[in-house]
Length: 209
Image 1 (cartoon, rainbow, N blue to C red):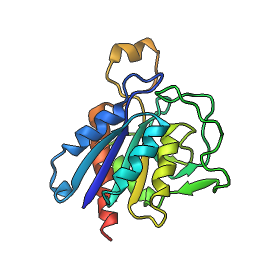
Image 2 (image 1 turned 90 degrees about the vertical axis):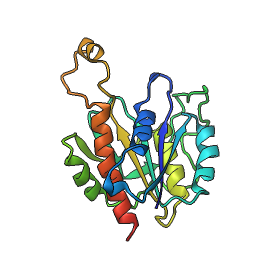
Image 3 (image 1 turned 60 degrees about the vertical axis):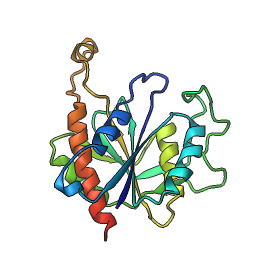
Image 4 (image 1 turned 135 degrees about the vertical axis):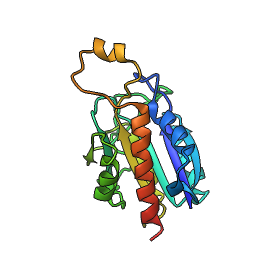
């Protein structure tokens, strides 16, 4: 089974994007349940043009599962996204400084594209690792939502199986977290990787059916 793992590079306001480190570590995990999974990794530049250029080429390699992670720094839990909205922000530039000219991705297109994954099963798998996780119907209006829309567009019949997941900021600098006065306990990158592994195993099991 071929698995595509994708994350994002840095973008304005986020000089470190843990989604890139997460997919790289996830690809190197060695577990019996991961045997037989051919995992490839791609880190998308946080640019609209990069998504448009890279995704068709990656899908041409015919993966069975496409699992994309993105950073949502203000969220306090892992969010399994269930839909991509036909919406894009004209206010926030991408990493190249580009701003979309329209507030929608596809003029005249559907209001949303919906994922085909067994969302509640995925949530249950990740909760076994004791990290906060939940479903989300709002992937935002930035590159994460845009990439999810474009990926689902490449899989209209649910094949390959596409899933987008937002991750929170990583607790890699405790002094920085304390200086912000955060009352929330942030997950470590290791905890996120462990949860992502359970998610990947669940997706692979579904894709074989």
